[in-house]
Each structure stands twice: as C-alpha cells, then as structure tokens.
View (cartoon, rainbow, N blue to C red):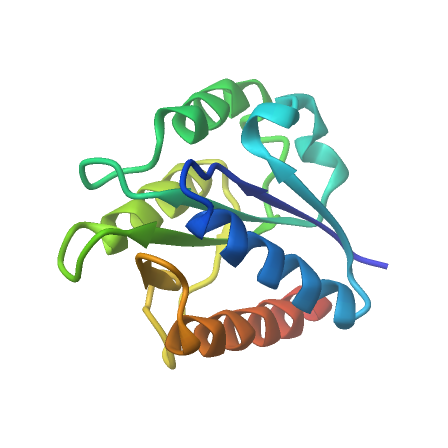
Length: 156
C-alpha cells in the first residue's frame, strides 16, 4: 500500500480544511495517509513516504515561514527522496493575490530534490487555490487533485 504525507500549516483553518479533504479522499482510494500540521512533523520522516501533498496559506506571495523552515531542513535528504510524488495547495485572500506562486514555490523546492511534481489541466495548474474559506469550486478541485494524484501514484 502506498503511503502519503499530507502536510500543512493553517492559521485561520482554511488550509486545514483543504488538507483534511485531501487526506479523506486519499484514504478512500486505499492509500495510507498521515495528515500532519507542519510543526508536528520532523523532517526525518520524509523517506518513509511515497509522496507528499503540501499546503500553506499565502503570505506575501509565498508559503508560510513554518512550511519554508520544514523545506529548508529537508536539505539533509537531498538526493535521498528522488522520485517521490509531490503536489501543492494553498488558501489566499483574493484572486490574483499570489496563490499560484505559493504552489510553485513548494513544487520548485521538491523539483530540486528530484521529486515528481504533479501539475493539473482541469484545475489550478499548480494546485488548488481557495479564496478564503474553501467553497464548492475548491472542493471539486480537491477531489480532482486526489483522483489524479492517486492515479499517478499507482503507476510509480
């Protein structure tokens, strides 16, 4: 059975709602899931997973410092987590406020690790972006993300 870490930071609860929806969807696809707040996880767990889905609110067009710190610490696993499947998601305050750049920053870090980063054609290309509280549109995008992620993960 494939194992995925759904990792997130959330101050207002919006990103957390998205993370829970993702974890629930993966579990329904018979994927072992660990849903963790970023401050509850040590970077040493990274090699134990087949993939990661990482979420952060948008702070000034990039990820929260807590997520960035975790990613910075992941350097100790450089060249040791190649081939893991990664996807990203975010919540932001407004359209055009930088949500896509948050997802890109997360994906970019894992591209450097040699991970396989998942992009999308039927939702936000870099990952789902909620404008404030996740709504029906975002819930559909999260479902699509989970379906695509599970499909690709099964081929790895």
